[in-house]
Image (cartoon, rainbow over all chains, first blue to last red; front, side):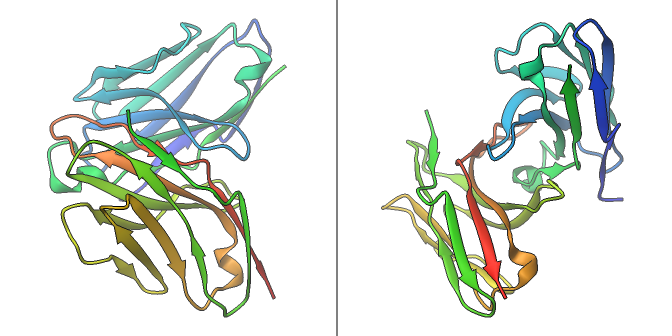
Length: 115
Length: 117
């Protein structure tokens, strides 16, 4: 299994809603990432988890709350989002303790629309 | 801080022809990784090719090859025998070597490649 699975694929939410994005991998990777991508722009790093601990937070607003409950699962909890938060949210994973650490495996993303 | 620059927002190539996408980067590190990622309309990020900085030999993957010039901090991608399926946004990316934790992947602004039949 060489996949990173993200659900849902599409999400529409109001500014007062609470929702969660889910990311799962079964490749034994111990580093997991959230990226945000606007159309025609490069992905921007949001968070990195290494061995289930938050190792990088790129000054992301608190309305985005990441969670890594186990080594296979990564969540992004969303609350009180703004319309400008509408974007594609990409999850990725890698092996942090092997030579293959340089290779990130990306999911197909969740397209989020905030109304 | 490391930066990655792609100076060609858009490129076009005729089917079966060859095209080269440019990328320059800036870093004070001596050992790192460089990548080219492809993002088709499906928006799935697909790794095309990677290069380790300490390896002088240019990486090759089938029709894709790179010209890695470490001193010039240049990392261009050559696509030979272009196919319609090569049409996509291409991102050049940099990552410093780091172990035992996840590391940041820094992307360029992207080059949108169109392939004409």
